[in-house]
Image 1 (tube, rainbow, N blue to C red):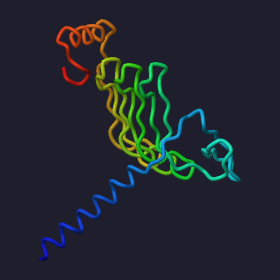
Image 2: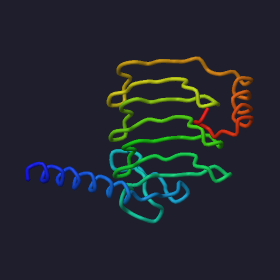
Image 3: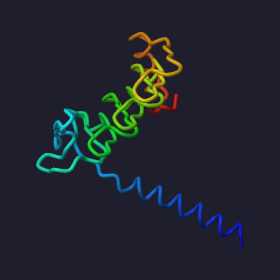
Image 4: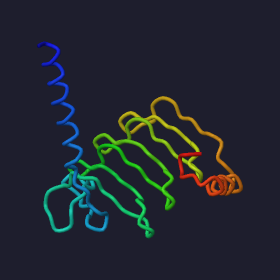
Length: 157
């Protein structure tokens, strides 16, 4: 009985967490604007609406692939963000907490190779800051040629 109750509680929490993620409203970048609040801080609003936005701000490249996703809460960056290149390879990833960089920020090169990792706490560098070897343009080109030759998708090589 005790084990069954524990499983039920865990399942309820998991479903609540998942349903919260499913309800995150996606708003396109062309439909928003920044406005200054009383303190002079820029706050994100949907055009024509008064309340600050809590959403995932998105924009796509002209080819239809996602350019970025940035989470906002009460009009400020709060949560994960990702930027991608037109070919769907990540450009950078990180997290904000209450508008400040917080946690690991990662940058990627033209073939998806790791370029840098920086750790932040409340907007300030805090911890490791690592830089890695960037592929040359020739190496990036060879990477994509090898994908094509082997009929592989990005991430499978």
